[in-house]
Length: 161
Image 1 (tube, rainbow, N blue to C red):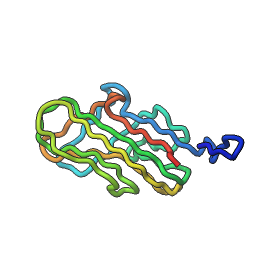
Image 2: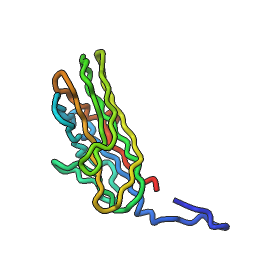
Image 3: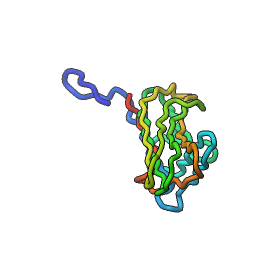
């Protein structure tokens, strides 16, 4: 970030303190993820790092979590897409912070076709122990295949302040 000091624009923080994270399931059908139905919230295994400027995302099983090294506010954006299906189940997406549900978007699907759920939240992190992961839940019906294409299922995080 820059601020005006009266004569010049000067950085307010070191550029290395600003995290940029872009993750997906692998960018191809081989990255598809099978989400079970009628279970608790399941962590989405974002295992493919497109960008991780400060090495703050743990893309190993079973973690798949973001733990920033710098305290501040971070914008967390996530989406998943279920391949075409006929279902009346409830499909949800949630951001979990420190192992607890922090925010959630869930609603029923009442037709056939592609199912997409998105979530965004500005979250404060202490820069040492706070972490987030993104989870999926399907209430009812059978398990579904989460699309592995990077444009359909992703997690983006960046430091806002």
